[in-house]
Length: 142
Image 1 (cartoon, one colour):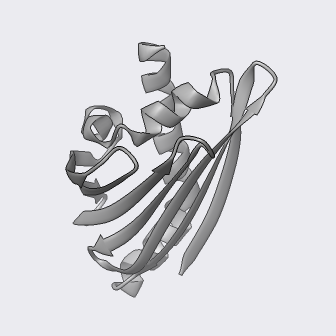
Image 2: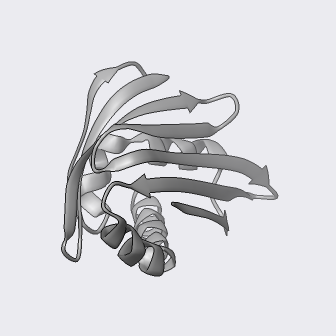
């Protein structure tokens, strides 16, 4: 099982960051290795999303149930179908000064333990790439 937490200060309003992160339909435009991203059903507060991701030799389609709370500025994604026993991502956005603290927690238990070892060894690098891609996206649209 992989359990990782990452925090970062960004000089953008929390509400704006929240909106960028919940825009799953745009992920394939800027996240490295994301070939497909789409909200397939639901509402603004709770929806089902499908992603197709590839990293090195690992690739797979993931379907997640995503719960968004605009008041608490949190987004929680729970995997419901894919190459895992369990998958949970939690984004939190807290105002700090003129910007925000963004906190990301990921817990994943892959079915394939060899891929899990590879992922665990590279998770910090992968997260930094994903966070950097979100920062570039934010700079582009803000």
